Amino acid sequence: MSEPTQTLDIRFTGSGSEYFRIWIVNLLLTLITLTLYWPFARARRLAYFQNNTLVGKDPLGFHGDPWKMFRGYLLMLLFGVSYWAVSNFAPVFSWIPLLVLAALWPALWRASLQFRLRNTSWRGVRMSFEGDLKGAYLCMLPFFIPGFAFGVIIALVAPEVQDSKDRAAGAMIAAAMSLFVLAMAAMSPWVLSRIKQYQHGGYSFAQERTRLKAGVGAFYGFSLRAAGVSLLCTAVLAGVGAIVVVMLGTSGGAAMIALPFVLALAYLVFPLVLMPYTTSRLQNLLWSNTRSRRIQFDSQLKFAPLMSLTAKNWLLIVLTLGLYWPFAKVHTARLRLEAMAIAVQGDVNAWLAQAQGGDKGILGDAAGDFFGIDMGL
Image (tube, helix red, strand yellow):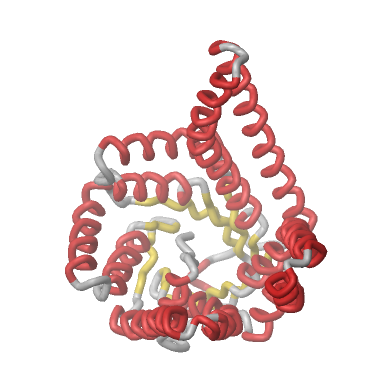
């Protein structure tokens, strides 16, 4: 006889006015301290958003030590300063810090996931990330192969271009760049699939460890649909440009007037349409296919409400000269979180394990910030 299943709804109880007070203080202190307050500001932000995220009426907890985050931030800051110094005083060696960063990237990313999960709790039980270091490197390895091949080709051909101005060598570089772009476009869904399989396959809570059931075909389907939306936006913009030219006349001057108008419109249309579309579809793809033995996530984030909210947020941010930003963050978090639910098989209290404590290094959270990795959900 199977155990009964209960659904845990997710609610977000934060308010824009509350977060505005945290945000403005964080902003001022970060500016006054020349960014040194940033890790403490981030800890306050994470604590606010997680403490106001209710899963089945119980809030998430955040236990990250801001001083550990500060030490990690200093190390990352030291790396940035070192890169600046090498680039300015010994530019011939500027590739070395980038190579070191590329070599450490998977390890730092894994450390950031460990830090965030190990410092997140629900009902007093810590979560964890169980992905191993080897898996982090293997899932990202295909991402570096085209870049490495492109770098080798440039290193072999570039001297010939400088010395002889050889047109054939220049053509080879152009061909290499084209092949690089095509390879990255073709491989991106596969690489994204590998990365997300590793990431969503490493979440652990109590005795439960998740896995991602979506295959690589689902990611190629997502990418093709996103490309279709992008082409549709391009077609609409081209149509608008044609209408403007017809209204102004068919002279070259009309085209010169229409081009800036269409480009300005593109800066609005693509982020306001493509970004909400990809965000909603990717969230649904990932979380609706993330599950463990007794836990099943579900996400039903709709494109139209997210697009409408994004347009409203951008408009109010512009009208308030940026002061609406914290309100926009709260409203977006509420829409995205409350589109999710968790189905749990059996009695949760019966299988909650002892909380896991500690983290694996001070670099984890700083690495997450440095690469823009933030597991808000």
